[in-house]
Length: 409
Image 1 (cartoon, one colour):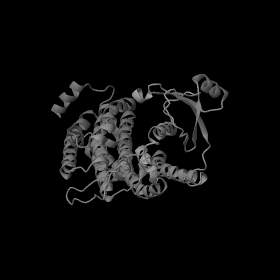
Image 2 (cartoon, one colour; image 1 turned 180 degrees about the vertical axis):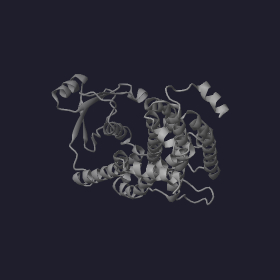
Image 3 (cartoon, one colour; image 1 turned 30 degrees about the vertical axis):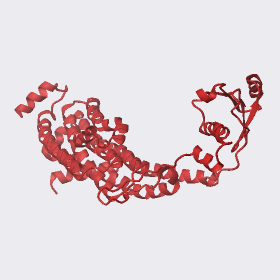
């Protein structure tokens, strides 16, 4: 077994045996399972979502405009007439009504209605707003239109959007929607965690070995290239295994979530295409950032300095999450395409866009090619950095010194 393979095996076995790594790998699927099971238990306790009879709520109203013609029942809410604001207010203070409204004398021109409540609210509760609106509609239109037309006026449309496949002209099998966004959003976060967990261990390991002089012993037995190659591939294989566990468990958890939260999430589906793209971007993203972390670990002299410098690259990687709303609402915008093609933001931006649009194949192909080319370029550059700074102790070189030594290497 060559030295690279020995280092690969050592790093892989050491990482997958770490307690923190095992907990993190298992915690994500277990937390999702607990969340889904909790929802099912809560649904069973509340009678499977079948609400019981609602308690009648009484709302007072004062009508100086005389638009109310007697329709005073709105489901479980009953409206009670008062002749004056003072009478309605004293009844509210006594606790005999939940609240009251005052219809403006010029209501037909202004539409103004004032609502008085005994407690502070951020906004009007939805059921109260609908009840007051329907109460006014019944009294404004009830005498002149049929009940069916009045009911339709209260709910004028049930709008549904159907995505049409531009090639066949038929409804697309993938209708997108909220369910299609949930998984890419969650997996963009998991992708960040997986990439930076593995590359973080690489950074920490290199910094510690350099700080306690173990690096000198290692480099007396293996070359710098064998050392970094074995470490990158070993830790990357462990991260890939972690990502594979999350993706495989997601297929089963998505089915369970669809059955228990169908009204909210709809049909969740983890397609083979999504799994393949996610794993491909994990591999490329990990290699890219692992090489950067290796260079950072070789330049800095302490673990703390390594972590501070690595934060810059971490922020760059997660920057697409800051523009999440923009990417979801404008997935085909040139800026979104740029983030997909830019190697340092490509993994997260692409996974987010997959849930919002159908990314052209050329964009994914070009994105992966640029990431691979950037990784190779950084590998050649980091090899020089590794040779120049790995055994340098005492201080972290400045940028000008790094550039000068790279030219000499």
